[in-house]
Structure formats: C-alpha cells, structure tokens
Image (cartoon, rainbow, N blue to C red):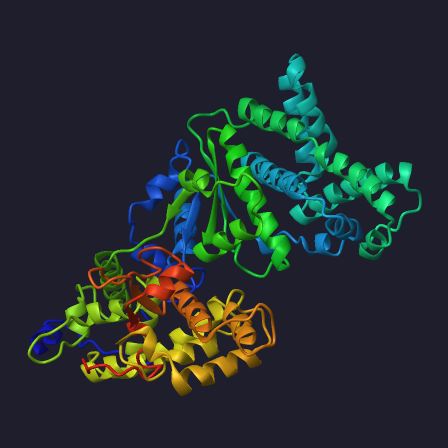
Length: 550
C-alpha cells in the first residue's frame, strides 16, 4: 500500500479543512460540475415527449444536483424556488380563511395560481421580458398573430388583461389574481347576505340558512373560475409561442419541502402543482420538473386525498432517484481524484491511495462507508468528510481514522434524521432511544421491561402530534380509545422503519426489507408479525449498538 503513495511525484497529504464536497448541492456547484455521475436520469428528464417530470427521492439523494445539472445543460431553462413566490399573504387573507371555515375547496383556485405563474415564467423565458414595454410589445405580436382567428379571441383576452404586468415579480401577480378573486366572492355573497363579516369569526356566526346560502354562492364563484379560458391560453401558447421544434423550455422547481408556506397551504399548493403538470403537457416543447421528497409526496397525497383518488395514475410522471453501490463508489472516486488534482497533482489519485485497508484484507473502506448510509450521495460525502477531519495532516485515512470518523458521522446521522423527519415525527428522539444498547439484530420481545417503560414515559411527556406519543398517551390513559403496550411498540417500529433506522423480516425465509430499498412504509400488521429486526449500521455508534469491530 505504501507503494501507492510513493508513486506520486508530490507527496499526498490530507490538509486541514480538506473536503470531498459540500452536503448542499447549491454550495457544491464547483465539484458537482466536474464530478457529476449520470445514472441515466438526465436523458429521461430532458425528453419533452416523456411524461416523466416529478423528481422523487429522499433528502440527500441528489434531486437538487439533477436540477442544477439540467439548468446548465439546457439553454432555455430556469430554476423556480417557491420561497421566491411569497404566498404568505394567502394564509392571512380573511376571505380565504372564511372559505376554508365554510369547507369550500380551493384546489381549483390554487391550480389557477400555478397555471398563471408557470405560463408567465415560460413567457419570460421565451421572450426575455424585463419591463412593461417589452410586455406590451409581446401582446401586440400575439394580437397580430391571432387577429383573424376568432377561436383564439377568448384566450387573447387573458393576455390583454394581464399582459402589461407579465414582467412583474411573481408574488405581485399572485396578489392581483387573489384580489380579483376576493372581489368576485364579496360581490356574489353580498347579493344575498349584505354586510357579511368575511372572516373566520364571520363564518362561525352565520345562521344555518345564511351558511347554506353563502356556501352555495361562494362555491359557484370558485367553480366558475375560468379554467377553460386558461386551457385556451395554453393552446394559444402552443400554437404561437412554443411551436419551434428545435427549441425546448424547462421550468425546474426546487425547495418544495422547505418552509415557504404553512403546512396545510403547502400541501394544497403542491397537489395543485402536480395536477397542473398534466395540463402543461399540452405544450409539446415545454417541461415542468419539480423535485419532491418521497415522504412529502406521500403526505401530500394523504392530506389532500378526495373521493375517487387513484395514486397509481401519477406513476407515469414520477422518476425515482435511486443509487447503486457502484455508482456511489464512482462518485467517491471522481471526487477524490478531483480534490487532489486541485491541491497537488495532475496524476490520477485513486481511492486506494487515500484509504487504508485492514491488514489481512477484508472489506474495502468505500464499501464500509457506503453500508453506513441509505445509498445517498450526501451520506457518503458526510462520512468521507469526517474521515478527512480525523486524518488531517496524515498521508492516508487509516483504519483507526475510519473508526474515529464513524463516531462523529453516526451522531450527525441521528441529528439529521431528527431534523429531516421533525414534521412527521417530532418525538423521534424519544422513539430512537428504544434501540440504545441493543444487539444489531433483535426481536419485538427485546423491546420490553424498563427499556420500553422509560421510552413510553418520555413519549407521554412529548407535547407534539407524533403517532407514537399519541399511542403512549392512550396507553397511559390520557386519551381515547385505550391502547396496549403492544400498540405502542407497533407504532414505534412503524416510525423507525419509515425513517430508515431499522429493517424487518416478515418471515424466517425472507430477507430484511428497508424503506430506502423496498416499500417506504410498513402496515401495523407487518410491524406486529415481524420475526427479526435489524438496526441500520449508520446508527450503531451513536446508539451504542453491540457490534463486532471492523
């Protein structure tokens, strides 16, 4: 092994602060450009004829990296960040709160907002609109094109109404759309119920008769939103703006899982966006590509599910970001070579030059690193960076440094899991404690006695809407219906499986299944009948799991 180090003209040394990359794709642009590993997804996403458009993967799987790469490769593309589209004003709108209190669905309204946003972003991209004069010039050109086409007059009226404002910031346009909608609602309601207080309190104070009348009129306004008119707008865009078969246009949407709106509004907006993806398929040279976390999409569908909902009809739109071990090894090798090339030498630097193997052979260090992640680039980079910290000023990452790094990495993985899943499992820290000090493989019966009792009391004291905490309160008599100790264990196992902390066997002949490799969730029945449970290696050091040393 020493020979591998000496073969380089310049001595290779791991400098203080040396990294194989940043964990955030935006901050990692430099290395990402040189070390991007195409797993075959880029071609599918670029293909405007393919319906595949929802980039689906867990946190750290490389969704943002795909969008950044697409944006650099595609001449006519723009990355849209929902945080830049301020929709907080919607949550503070008295009239929208009024409608929500009356139980009136606003899904169609949210779809209209998205359709307007996406259509305008495409026009800005197509015509480089920067001011009112350019917007007016565009409207005149469209008018000249459709002047003799009576079938397009209604569609053109939409451009006439909004065209001089297309260049404005998106949130300003949304405010104007919302204000118009509010005026229509107030006008309709005022006909039958004058001076009604359009607020949550006003909705609650309506008599039964008034509530029926107001609900009826408001529902009519929502239903009459000009979806047909906007369909005609899309057809007009296809015929007159995006009809060049040599040019393709992409809107890339990132950051949907961030805190850009209150939870319920965010779920409704994301569902509306997904529905609009199908509408924009009418534009044959255009593709809308949002990146969404797997758990977020599951929750959106759960929270916005209505009668007749069929999740399988969205399958053709979904592209799952999945990595193999070999692809992750390739990424790691490319980054090692690129980092050392920038620091020291133009000669190729291999993983074997930097990472020492245990005497007598055994598992490759890169395999050891990859096994302690969820087959995601972020996990591999995080562990490798910890290795460089542990081996600072050395020529190689020794086996001892690999182990030292694992302690810090494992601790950070526990912290990252808590942060990643907080919206779904705010009491995850308490649930994870049920694993502390166990063997790597265990059974349900091992979760019992003082261990389980301590966790149940901790969950009971956790004042959040966490499924395991709710079950613990039911078990201890604070909530109905009553639960058993076995019910609490089942809920904890479902949570730990979902986040990737454990894998389970459903029979002695089966292999272990994992949420990041197999089905994302398990049922209560699966959690009850599991015969064998395995703790993921990424958590072993942090949770003091009894394992044999490497």
